[in-house]
Length: 518
Image (cartoon, rainbow, N blue to C red; front, side):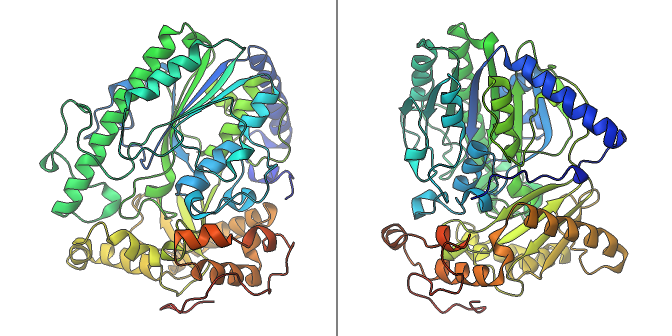
C-alpha cells in the first residue's frame, strides 16, 4: 500500500490563484498548529443508517432538539458525505482517512472483508501515540480489530435489539471521569439501523405514526409499508437524539465539555430505496455537526463539499499528532474558525459490495456544485442490490410501475445501469433524470468523467485494471454464505496491488448469474 499524496492542488481552485493558494495553505498550517497546542479532548458520535433527517437540516418531520442545539452551538455542514454508503467501508474511512479502495475494507466486516494491511495508520493508534487516552463504545465493524488499539472498549457489537441503551452514556461517564491526559472517544449508536423500532424504553416519548410523515423525496414512491418504515426511521432518530442528549449531559457533568471537540456524523444514508448501498445522494449525504467551544464559530452553516476523509486530518491537527502522510482529505479547522480558504470543487465516492454477491455492483462517483456523475464499472449488467433492497419493501415495485415516467426510468436504470449517469443537482436534487446521453450536457459529462478518471489514477484504484475487476467480480460472486466468506478468506488484498497476478484463478465456487459474470 502506498501512502502518497493523492489530492492534486490543480483541483483546488479559487480566486486566489496559485500564490493565494500557497498562502492559504501556509496560514491554515500555522492556525492548526496554534490550535493544536491546546490539545482538546475529542468526542466522535456516530449514528447508523441515516442521512440529515434532523430538524436543524430542515427536515419537516424530525424532532431532534438535542442535535439541533449542538448545531446552534457549533458548525453545521450542509454538504457532507461519506466515501461509501456501507457501514464497514465508511467507518474504516473516517478512522483511517482513506477511501475504501485505498484501505481495503470494501464490504462488511461480518462477511470477512478487511483492510489490506494491519499496519494501515488509523486514528486510535495515531492519537494514542500522541498521548491521548482512547475509547470505543459500540461497534468497530472494521477488520482486523487488533489494528485499533483502543484503551477502553464497551458494548462491542451493533446492539440492533437496542438493549440497555442507558449504558452508552453510563460507560461514557466512566470514561470521562478517568484521568490520563486528553481523550479520544468514539461512541457508536445502533439507531437508525434496522429493525426500525417504534419505541424502546419509552423512547421516543411521543412516537410518530405512518399518517404523520411522508417518504423521503428521493424514494419517488409512497406505499403504506414505506410510510410505516419511514415513521419508525424518524422514531429511531428521535430516540438517538435523546441518547445523544444524555451523553452530552454526562460530558457537561464531567467538567470537560469546554475542553472537548464534539463531532456528530451518520455513517451513511438510510437503508431504504435509493439510499444505502448506492452512490446516490440519499446514500452518501450525511449530517456533520461540530462543536468546539472557544474555537469553532458557533452557529455557522458551511456549504463546502466535505467528506468523512477530512476527519482524520482534522483530529490529528488539533491533537498536535504526527500527520499521516498522503491522506487525501483536508483539515476542517479553518472552516470551523470561520475562514474561507480555497476548497475542493469536486467530491468523490465509490461503492463495491455490502454482504457479497447479493449486492455486488462496483461504482465510482464525482460531484461538483451542480452536477453529479456516477460511473458503473459493470455497465449493462443487472444490479442485484435493487432486488436485495426490495425484499424489505414488497409493494414498492408495483408502486414504481404505477408512478411517473421519470421515476420508472430511474429505477429501471438503477436495476440495469449504463456506464454513466449524470444528474443536474440544481434542478433535480433527487437524481431522477439521467442526462448522460443529452448532447446539451456533453461538456459537463466529459469534464466530470475526466476528473473521475484522474482521481482513480491518483488514488491508485485497483479496479482500473480490467483483469483485477473481473477477478474481483468472480471472487465475490463465488461466495454464497457468510460462513464461507469468513472461513475461506478473501483473496483481493493480495491481487488488488499485484502481490498475486490478477489473472490467477479466483477463490471459492463461481455461480452462474443472470446478466452475465465478467
